Image (cartoon, rainbow, N blue to C red):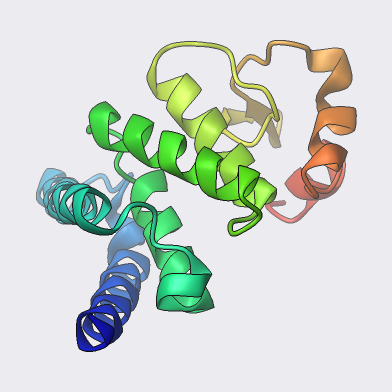
Length: 166
C-alpha cells in the first residue's frame, strides 16, 4: 500500500503539472488546442474517478500536501464530468468535516460544481466574464453576503480577489 500511495502522489502531481502547462489552451481560439485541453482534463477526470473509488478522497494525510492539491485541481477542471465533480465534492466535504481537507478548496469546488449544474454559486469564486475591464462573477445565491461567506472559509473579499486579475 505504501508504494502504491507514493506512486499515486507522483501520478497526481504529474497530472497537475500537465494541467498547468496546457491550461492556457482552455479558452484558445484554436479548436485543436481547446480539444487537446478537453481530452487532457477528461482523461484526468476519469483517472480521479478511479482513484476516488479505490482510496476515497486523496487527502494530504494520505498523499501529501502537493498531491492533495493536485487532486482538487483535477476535480476543479473536470467541468464536463459532473459525476466526477459531484463525487469529489461529496468526498471532499467528508474530508473537511473530518478535519483532513481545507474548507477554502471545498468552497471553490462547490461553486464550480454549482455553476456547471447551471445553478447560482455561493462564494463568488467563479468568474463569468469581464465587463468594463472588471471580472464579473457568475450569479450568486446571496450576493450581499458573498464577502461574509468567503471569510468563513478563508477566501479574501471579492474585490481583493479580482484585483489580482487586473
